[in-house]
Length: 480
Image (cartoon, rainbow, N blue to C red; front, side, top):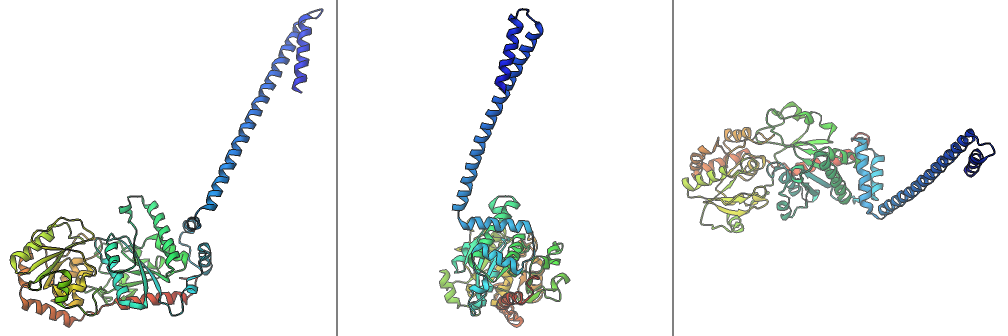
C-alpha cells in the first residue's frame, strides 16, 4: 500500500514538472504525496522497532521470572513456608486459632499435630519465652519452674536476656534472641524477625504450650500461639509500682489464655489491685533447692577458705552502676571481719571492685546460700524470695529505677516482718552491716524466716502450666 502511494506520487510530480503544459497544482500534489509516503514509512519503521524492542524486553522479563521461580523451587522449603506463615499472620492479625488453622499450619510445616507426636505418657513440652528486663528475674523464674517441676515438664527457654549463656551452662535448654535494642533495628523489622523465630521454635520443638515471663506480652507471641492453636500462659510477677500502665492486664484475655501470678512477700491475692485478682495465684517462686548443701561444701565449690566468714554483695537490676557495690563492700570491710564476695554479673561489664573477693557468676547461686553470713542485695523478686526460702538474713537496698517492680514496698514489708533489713540509701549501710555482724541478730532473723515458713510455689506453677494445656485441649477450639 505504501509502495503504491509512493509510485503514484512520483508520477504526479513528474507530470507536473515535465508535462507538455507544466502545472503547479500537479507539482504540489506530487510533493504532498511524497511527504505523506515518507511519513508512513517512518511511522512503520518506528512501530516495527518498538514492537521488536518490547518483544525482546518481554523475553527478558519472562526469563527473569523463570529464573526467580526456579530459584524459589530450589530454595529451602523451610524458608518458603516460613514466609507464607508470616504473611498469613500479618494478614489475619489475631484471628482466633481453630482446629482448621492448626491443621493448615501443620500441613505447611509437613508435620503431624502435636498431640499425635507426643506419647500418651510423655511430659508436656513447654516453650518458655522471656523478655530481657534489668536483671535475671524473668529467666531465673522460668528456670525455677523447670527445676521444681522435674520430670512432669519438658521445657525450653527462648530469652531476650544476655544472661542466656549463664543459664545454659547450668544445663538448661536455652536459646538467645536479641531484643530490639540489642539488635539495633526498627520495631516492625524486629517483630517480623521475632515472629519467624517463634515459628521456628514451635515447629522444631513442638510445644504443647507457650509460657511468657515478662511485663508486656509481645504481639508476636499472641499471633503465633493463635496460629498454632497453643495455649499462651502469662507468668506475671506482681507488686507493680503505682502508675504502671495496666491496659494490657485489664484485657489479658485478648492476649493470653491464662495468667499465673507468683506470690510476693509484699502482695497477696487479697491485697493486689482488683485487676490482678482474676488470675491463678501460687506461692512465691524461686530457684532455692529443697535442701541446701553444707557450708563447707559451698565454700569448697567457690574456692573460699572455710576459716573465714563471707557476705555476698550483689547489687544489680537497677543498682548496678558500681557505686552502690563499692559502698557495700566498703561498709562490710570497715565495720566487720567478714569478707565481702562480689559475683561478676553476666548482665554488667564493670571493673574490678577493690576490697572484695570477685568470682565469676554462678547459676543458680542460691545453691551456695550456706556460704554467706548475710547478703547485701537489691530488693528484687528473686533476691528476696531466695533468702526467704533458704533462711539467709539479708540487707536490702531497693532500686527506684525499675519500671514496674516496686522494690521499695517489698523491702519495707520484709523489714516490717523482721525477715530482713531495708536500707534507704548507701549512707546508712555501715550501721546496718554492723548490726548483722552480730550472730544473735542473724539468728533472730533466720528464726523469724523459719517461722514465716514461705513455701516455694515453683512446682505448683508447673502444675498450673500443665493444666492450661489440658484445659485448652478439652475446650471449644474456636475459643482458646
